[in-house]
Length: 89
Length: 549
Image (cartoon, rainbow over all chains, first blue to last red; front, side):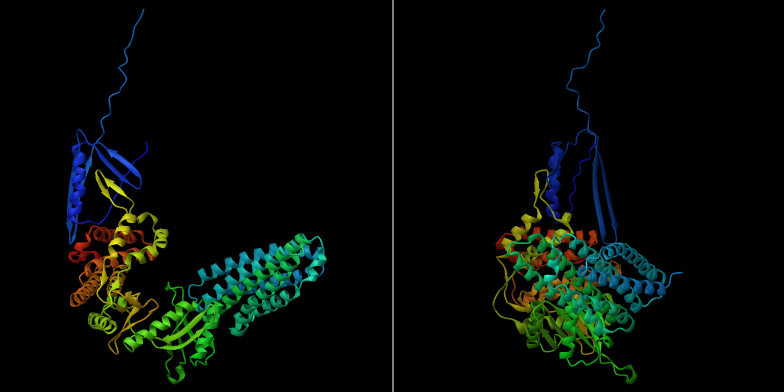
């Protein structure tokens, strides 16, 4: 199965980071997150049961906060009508 | 058992074999003897094998003899380079005789002067071994000069063939003749490589013949009378300027306790060397003694060279990375006094436009070549657009037009920490490598200096802390000069210049992680700058953390 990935890394101030997070929060609310970089797009649909992990660490003057969400996408119901077993005589 | 004797002996064989191959080619051109043809072709395989054997012996000897000194290693390197070029000459011989097979009228060869080529080539081979054994510089130069003479002969032959081609007859044979002369000319190129390898073995450093010639003339202009092979010549291989920069120690006599005099030799394109000479003179006027004195200067069409005073003392990066707190304090206190004084001495009230982004765009191709993936493309986080490097740099370039330093000062132009020397004896700061000096914005020099501390690939905590402290002092110095001169856009311009320096510094940084770190900082500064409305430029604050690692 082909893997789709999106990655973005930059230095920012807290104000910009807030605007990034707000945009993501809005997407989570709508259950549709569209992430794009270098002409490639990935669409995620967070819904149902999600796992969230928040990790924080401080060591000397180095700090880290990571927020991770993961979930399994629910399989869409088949559009085909259920097959009916027919018995004939 | 592997011995240097094997190497020397086989090397001697190769020289003799190739010399003989050249003799046979000469004979074959005079008299198309099929036996000679057969001999030349079959001997070529033997020469190939001998070259491979010598290559193996060279590497194996270096590997096995770990106690060899630099001079001995240089001799092996020279033998290796010479072997490769001798084998190439033998190949050219085979190519020449094969080309004669295409001549419909073989007599046409005698209508052109091919003999003089051999008169230049043949005497070179008996010189190779004596030069290596006796460090005979003049004979090495004879080999180098053969290439120049062969080039002249080729030009004459080429012009004659062209003249005949215009007649429109014997076209195929005339084209074949050009190929033959071209191979003879290429033998000259290989002889030059051999000559330069011999020069390197004698002098101890790789040097091109044009630079060697300039070195000799410059030393002679400076009154140095010693034979050049008695001079200690040490090339600065780390230089990226395209010039040959070497330290030369001459005139010393250990028997009488007379120390050698150290000078710096610079050889390169006349434009660069002349510009550096002019800048040295300009700095001498502003602050006598700040830069090295020019001892002698020599210029030719394609090469210029000068000998300048060697300034003793640690460079500022050595001061910071060293473990002498007193030296560090003296050096920085002197620097903090010197820089504003130099700015004041050279200051005019003409505003200095900022040109950081133009300088960055100028070097962009080279940076992208080394780190193509580290530039930000356009991105999107849901509804939030993130601008690409291209857009950010365009916006920054537009905003840069709005700002200028309130005054113009004479700047170093390449103000890296390793271009500033602290002389402890006279407690003075000296500038070196002032080729790029020009009137400009003092913050350009400050940004270059700040990033030159940042980009040092030193990650040990103590050294990093000292580098950060050095950066903090430079930043304070810049801020204080800005305040004293009512420089309202200083923070904004410093951010532009820092962005430029972070980007351009990665041209020489192959550590991808460290390069990424610098490019992310460059992108951040560009983004911050590009978000500033023109009216808000005086209120712009440069986040100081960006200069600390």
